[in-house]
Length: 162
Image (tube, rainbow, N blue to C red; front, side, top):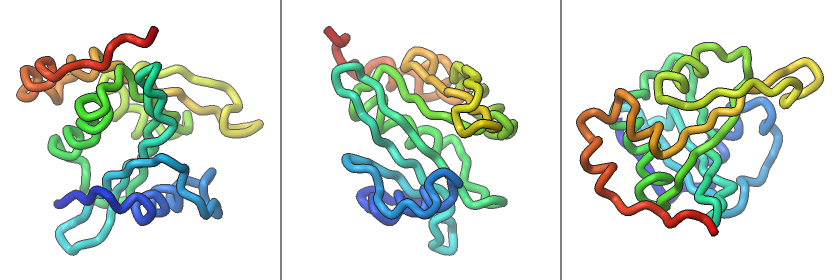
């Protein structure tokens, strides 16, 4: 497995093509950053799109998508996924939303220590979504960071918003 950075248009379009609400949208959100996951055959199999960064509040939105059946989720992928918002940007929270009927992804978010809040009709009249909120402190305490904890805690944090 390998990772690509700096190919925001390619990875952004890949992520958007796999999410029903974004299909047919031709423009990657401005000021986006992405990380792509490449399999052993050189194929893009997963992507992370970061946008809606609010520097003053210290929050950023993440949108994630992957090809079904591909093995891309590893400790290294999880580490890279949150290194950008928490360590590079100094964010105090990452957020996103997931269709409430996507039980597998919601279990994964719960394992990462996300707070989950169900919102009726957020994805349409008959489709609920779950807001997924991950504070830096919750990230630092999740079970995947046991080996990395001392590096994460030692990094400087963004100053509190005024």
